[in-house]
Image (cartoon, rainbow, N blue to C red):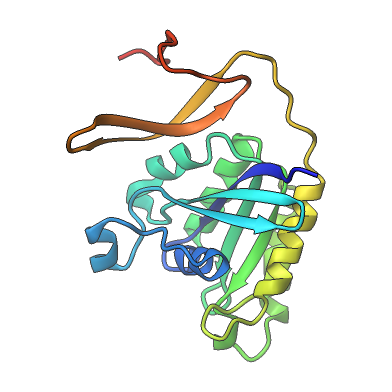
Length: 217
């Protein structure tokens, strides 16, 4: 059986460990810009890939800093699953709430909560209860909350299992034959020119096709 493909977007407050978690899950470093490595924060969208039993997840790692929230919106414009990241030592923060609202506005109704940096607290129970209270009346109210640590690897396999279970609940993708590409990056490569990347839904695109950009400009 061919694996089902899905787009997974991270969300959460700055410095709560989204990129470190993606690297621990996939082995890929989503932060690619020199400034990101220098400052230790995600500025632009990062990408990685995770193979689970029966599922193939394309991961979009988004910035958590409020100055780059527009990049976060670009990253979650067309997703199937959300990975909401909350640090066990900090708990629920303003950007956590803002990212949850953005996920809600964009219709992300399935996902998992990763309680990162769980090795920094003696007991995660209070944080788990806090998160569940914050998620009430949100599209992620039924999301599993999984304590994890990228420092010692605790909870990573449990998180993969929870992501696989969430992916199982996705309805089948429908193909209406009308291709749409949600653009997430535009960059220039020397000797090649302008490169546009994004998430394609509904059909296929081929070299020579005529396309329309919305909004125009």
